[in-house]
Amino acid sequence: MVKTWKQNNISVNQQQLHVTRAGSPGLPALVLVHGFSDNGLCWRATALDLEERYDVIMPDARGHGHSVRIARGETIDMVNDLHEVIQRLGVEAPIIAGHSMGGLVAAGYGARYPNNTRALILEDPAWWTPAPDHPEPRGLSEGSVMDAWIHQLQAQPLDDVIADSRVEHPTWSEDVLQHWCEGKQQLDAMFFTAHDAIWDQDWQDQVRQIRCPTLLVTADVELNGIVTPAMVQQAIELNPLIREAHIAGASHHIRFDHYAQYMAAVTQFLNSL
Image (cartoon, rainbow, N blue to C red; front, side, top):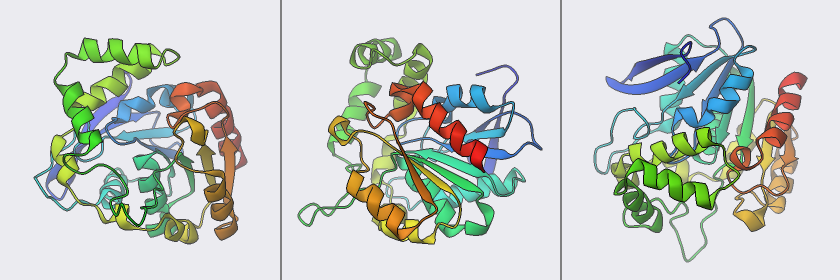
């Protein structure tokens, strides 16, 4: 945390969602939506680079970071949570950037609230399409491989998780490793039992409903990128407001792998608005 940044809890339906805010109110608003098992501070480097130009808002999703925990089997609505945070902060027509799950939520926000979205930046959004023989598209159910992975990480001391991740991701900064690993240990395991209808929606329906300039930042599919070239082509055909920035050599964690290239694409897009 940077000393000048502010951390607050926002009440949403009498439950608390944690928000970190950089920059200054009055500047154009930029909301950064993290991915599954991350937290708002996983956007720290981006916020540091953009806080002089934007009112940067980094919420912790429900069940993540320091936000409210989740009851077993609870029905949640991450797009509504994001909308409530934006409304309670008095922000109008923000730019919304999201990674992975956060990209899915950001696109969902742009589709549901087109009149309150200035622009979208989608970093390899979780636009998964279920195969006919695998109706669960996200792999986030209780007892899944991802569930077991999180439990394994939460059973270890944080320093050990960071050390192991440093070996697995040798190009990641220490700042990224710290917050990414903290996010894994902060995750509420009940998130795996929750249901959000956004996972059941076709990403194509989101794309059709977006009414603002949108930057789709993509990774190499061979390195576990989710959005394929065919999906990019289809997205642009469905909505000419979408443009792509492909970061060669990047995995699903695009900005962690190649931060300079990611920020160059994002800055160029922001300057075009």
